[in-house]
Length: 207
Image 1: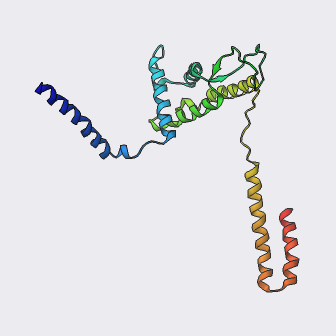
Image 2 (image 1 turned 135 degrees about the vertical axis):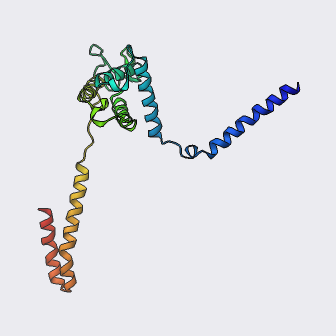
């Protein structure tokens, strides 16, 4: 009985020691961001896929074709309904009832996944020129997935519009031009000259 109680006390003390060690460790004080944690999980999943590949693959021999195979492998865990051509709901964004079409990985998820893995490859010693996640074949596959899912789901994927930022920049330039043109007349103290200069500057900025 005494030996048993002694063992229990020593076992209870062990977690306390390890807990103190974790607190004193610098790594424990700086947790990874959500993006970094997800990138690490994706990288470990991809390495596990290479190990389970038949025949097994090493990272040095990995190609864009293997990356595409990996994305197709992940489709079995997808949650996005992608209607097949013969489905009556093909191209319907909001089907009124369920169907038997397969679930796949959404294009947006695959695109973000490839971006994280591309960064992880180079962070783990890979050369940018041999990065399998940045190959032309991978880009073509992602584009085909995007276009195919857009037609099947009736939900077009539009690129982010940058016209708004250009308009804001042009407006800022116009404002700077107007203020720059009007300042000399104001400094002169002549109200008539300042009033006459303002419309001409605004007209020049508009043109």
